[in-house]
Length: 430
Image (cartoon, rainbow, N blue to C red):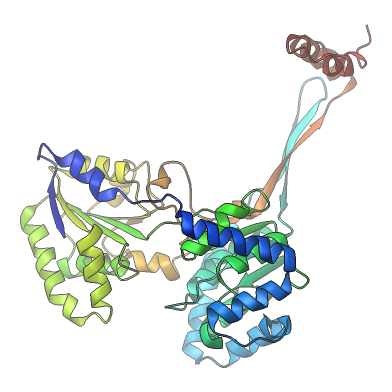
């Protein structure tokens, strides 16, 4: 891992270089995705079957070969060991409980002249959730995407998940059952995103698409945005740990590994206020790496984008954290509530030495779909509110129309919009 010191005259430049990640669209990927999306939009199910067979190595003859119903999902759940069933239920219940508290409610108020104003909250009708299915299975992604939609009141939740070589993962399908997914299509890639966005003879068009995927999925989500809503275009996973030296070094080392093992471009950063403690964590990492099945990925990630930063104190550490705006921020310090108040930008804040980021990934309750690549400066975790819409309510009384009409008339004439002005003036008594 790179070693940085805030007292170095080159620190800001070094930090900026560390965080740099090319997020621009790849022209070749964008071209391929554009062709796939246009083809699925034109040929529907036929194109979807062809791309699925080509990219996933399947042999589907009809769209029915790619559809799973509630009965299929329940059967997958019932095939699992009891402890896995229980774990899925616990995780889903905790995520549901947390997201219930995010649910927005409609409201109104009345002016002194009897005009009523307010906001009406309604759920989206139908959403699509994308679940990765390549190198690993992610039942947690199913729960995190589907449960807030379920809580919001979405009537139909359509899940797409690739099944390379036709291999279906029972844990992923069981998670869909537990989280209330309506129907599953075993398709992935840009073709799945296009099917959800435009609809086919069998795949219903959705209102919003959420969930992570590879570069082709990300490019497809960018392309269809506007036809449908999307949650975000996610970058590589990130963790930033601020440690004051009171947490066992082995714990912090493994927390850094937990994000580095995602892939070679994930980012793990540790900020400490003591060089001996940073050295202790480095020693723990050197020892523990021998036990990691994904050692090669972890070493590549830490070597490519990992770093240890020596800060003069926790105040400075928090300011650095605000600049980094990490996806996951661990405050592995005494009195974490005190220091959390100094954090302005982070996807999720894990407070105290016992709060490992991995608990948030699976079962703590808050959503693990979080802003990456410094976008926590202006965006938030996926939540129930992402599956609800707000409509403004305006009911002007006769008395209110007299006052508001004159104001609107003046402003409309100022914009040379005569019909706007006359529309308001027609309702005036004098």
